[in-house]
Amino acid sequence: MNKAEVIQLLIVIKQAYSGYDTSPSSVGNHLNYLADMPYDQALANVRQHILTDKFPPKIADIRKGYTADQEHEQLKAETAAFFKQQNEWAAQAAPPPAGMKEALRDRLFGKH
Image (cartoon, rainbow, N blue to C red; front, side, top):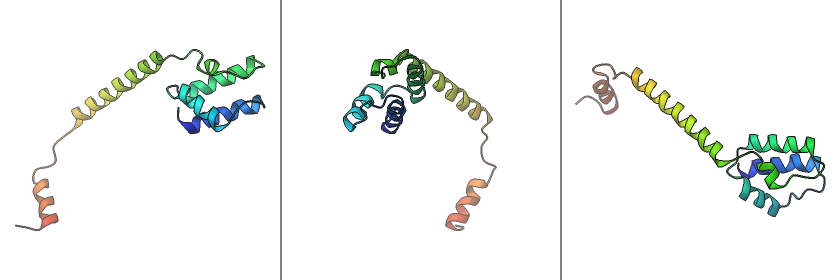
């Protein structure tokens, strides 16, 4: 999560809990502890907290149910999908037509 996303998250919390600290130091503190967490999951946790608790969420409440292992698994899956796509592109790749390289060189630098 980046600083802009932390600020958006704190705005959502502030709308539900008027006394919530949204000072620059609070933004920095939240960013420090939430930087590794996806914004979508943090927002979902905050919304669930708002629905179920009359007290504002602590950082631990925002991180509830999230572990770095989940992000690691997600990144592994995304990487595997990217490598699969690269392999498909490599299988479909073909060299340029014969003479194209020479024709391009002639157009750029003039005939020798």
